[in-house]
Image (cartoon, rainbow, N blue to C red; front, side, top):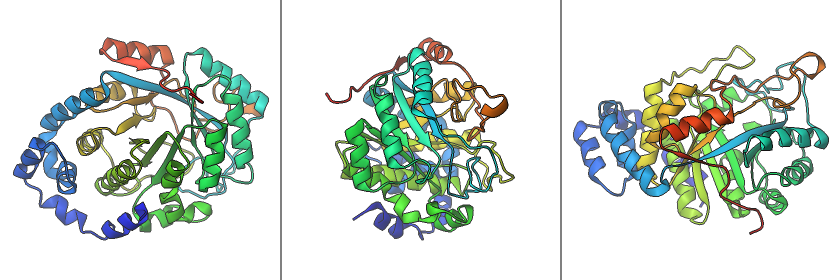
Amino acid sequence: MSFYDVYRKYKNEEWDKLFETVSDRDIEQALLRDYINLHDFVAFLSPAAEQHLEAMAEKAQELTLRNFGRIIQLYAPIYVSDYCENFCLYCSFSAANRQRRKKLSLKELEHEAGFIADTGMQNILLLTGESRNKSPVSYIGNCVKVLRKRFPSIAIEVYPLEEKEYAYLVEEGVDGLTLYQETYDEAIYRVIHPAGPKRNFRFRLEAPERGAAARMRQINVGALLGLADWRKDALMVGLHARFLQDRFPDVEIGASVPRLRPHLGAFRGPCKVSDKNMVQIILALRLFIPRLAISLSTREDAKFRDSLVPLGITRLSAGSATSVGGYTISTNGDDNTLPQFELADTRGVSEIIGSLRKKGYEPVFKDWIFGI
């Protein structure tokens, strides 16, 4: 059984009605339980739970400290190509946008890698636009070989691959996979992905399982909040993460909670996700899956990111650039490249480290060495 079978079982459930029938007592009882079931998770995501966020936060913080301590893992994204074959309505990299495209040479990648390594970062997330033609698996593998010289932990966020392709990248040095479903609402998914290979909803949905089967050490899933009803998408993210954790107990399973940010194009998400909604999502995920790694990117501003750390966050990006060559290549003249989305937290690595330590948290740069 794959997660697609689980998805089919639940996708037509009348979640709106279930959310609305949750009572205060349901939430209070759920907070007393050690094991949180699906009914409890629904309760924590319901409108009624908005009046219980303080109690949820207290338990979520306790669970986070018990399972992760006061450790925050830092990572940096590195974009190596923005060529894309998809026509996603919400992304600057969409093939519909007539922008100048760029793909790093291995020499340019060496330069970018050196800059990031000099900041102290040792966990790297390699990203490409979704183009097999311009960024084939062989190119990704060659990039990994370059990055391995400087970084002990390398994760990828690229187009969905076959299991044997993930296995090849693991052999080259990749230990983590991040792949967002974007939205778990299949009808909306097809509307916002009008053309391109990304229209294959099931192939994308099952990719994390192929990555785990290929011996990835970390798997990270998520939805781009704002594309569809956030309660339903958060619910499916939790179900997806718990399914992966149960099926692959030796793999560290994580989830991200990115919100839509300004990008090239006129599309605006139909579903507003407030700061309060974000807090509720993070708390619900932590209570539902106590050992879930929860990542927060620089899509959120500095003040908000700092406030969310005690509520269940375990991984933060730091000193990020979201364009190809964005760390070292000039943004003037011929080298001008477009970021995938606008940053909200523009602090450097040292500023984020200082903020974490001020709050009593210890930033971690390395928790893994390839080949050992």
